Length: 121
Image 1 (tube, rainbow, N blue to C red):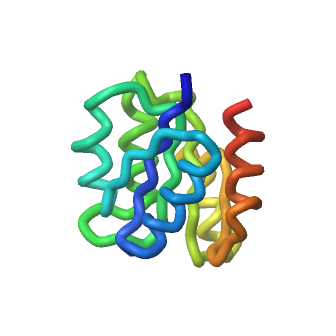
Image 2: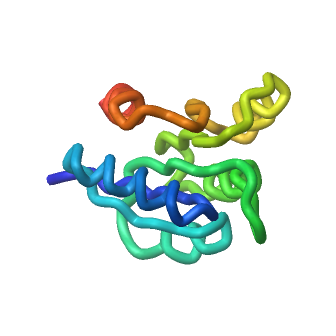
């Protein structure tokens, strides 16, 4: 059975590219436009990993991670930030919120798949 990954990004083109890349690699994908949308869609079924942007309207990636980590069902799933931000302070903020990893945009599709395979095992 293939694993399900949620991708959360306010940019339609980024969501499409991530979704296409993940589907090509054999994953199921659920797309969300921001943290609030992600939380609304997450109640549906099992999600094995979350890829989230940092800067989004309504609820940013850091707040999304905090809310997911507060939910027992999401305490241990991998959450990777996919963002243009590369400053150490932002990375530290993401880590302390509970992010598993960090990928800086723009990224190469094979780099994204490699990180996902490593994180999902």
